Amino acid sequence: MDRMNPLDASFLHIEDGTTHMHIASCSVFEGPPPAFDEVTRRYNNKLPLVPRYRQRVRFVPFDLGRPVWVDDPHFELGYHLRHTALPTPGGAAALHTLMGRLMSQELDRNRPLWETWMVEGLEDDRWALISKVHHCMVDGVAGTDLMSVVLDTERDAGTVDVGPWDPAPEPSDVTLATTAVTELLRSPYEQYRALRSGTRAPRDLGRRLGDVVAGLRAYGRELRPPPASSLEGPIGPHRRWEPARTTLDEIRTVRRALGGTVNDVVLTAISHGFAELVRSRGEDPTTVELRSLIPVSLRAPDARGVLDNRVTALVLHLPIGVDDPVERLDEVRRRMEELKTSHEADAGGAIVGVADITPAALVGPAMRLATRAMHRTPQWLINTVTTNVPGPPEPLYLAGREMLEYLPFVPIGPGIRTGVAILSYNGRIAFGVTGDWDAAPDIDVLARGIEAGMATLLERAGAAATTGEPAVSS
Image (cartoon, rainbow, N blue to C red; front, side):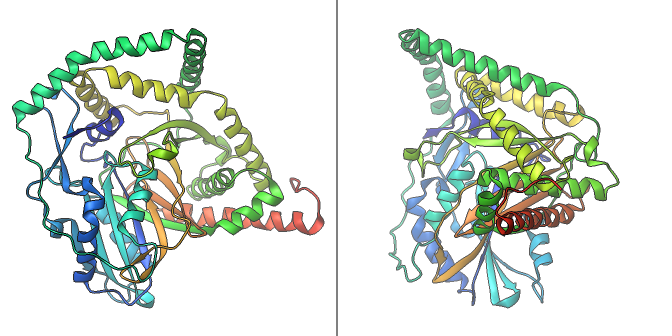
């Protein structure tokens, strides 16, 4: 029995039939596709490496404690690993539609919270895996680690048949409640120990508290309502999905010529895409304030491979009103540098820490109530989400077939009609654009705008390299 941390549990509490809290990917492989039985056998042999794949969520009676993971005595791989095919000719649009439809369906909480679909019938004799995992199980970094475990790092990797699985006995409701009460009674003592430890280094404790206060002030400045735009508002349960693409070499070319980090460059391209999107809707980008949630990983290097969530967040104003690509990149870089000194990440970590010492009987109902309220009352703190996750730098394989593309999906929630996930893989950078089916039917404009934004940056970078002088605004 393994208890969730507060952030993991929050992703369960805020899911409500409209806000779907799963993360996902669409992996495209070279053909010909293997037999489904072969894929099933290889997944089955990998299951001992990912124990969480055979565990389900149990809620503690009366919310006395956070939910726990327990072995599922009725686990059946055939329920989670599924098989389908696209209608001929299996073009990109059909795959994108299928991805959106699968992302519109929540995972069954009575079973382990993951599904993988083998999709045949893609054009050019390719096939795909659409993998879907609940956010309470992994964050983006852990999700890519998980994919690296399930797939092979060598084309001709062999397999070893595993024996039958022997699940641990499932705890009763009485055991769950008793354990939660015991932990609750122990909690004040643990808090006292943590406080004593902190007061032994008062100067360091004072600095940390100062950072948190500064971060909370920075968050507070975002409470001012922005001008109304089509980018924010209520959403429904159905999703659209569209990818965009570039390469790591192209981003490095822009960096060398124009400056900034890899993250700065991709955020600049995304800003261009959003400018194109609002312009196509008849809005002026200079009058639209676009606030993006930027998840920041707190995962230590030695925590790679641990399946949980270890993130905080920043709020970045994407400069969609700046038309010149070089000026836009400079503005993104300036704003990101300001955020690094704003201590918003420290404040986010402190908020999670408060949740850790708050009784679950208060946290769960409060979060569910807040989610319902956000569906009725507009939230204006953020109106999009942009998450950037480093993926495997080397090619991965399944049944001897190379994974050609690794395309991400990010969930959206109340007030957030579009979101963009960025994922690197083997020298490629993929953008996965999520949109609400009804409120964002034109996310293809955003996806193509991101690619156009990269093209304009490359053009300016090429001009700067040719003249040997720094690029200047035109």
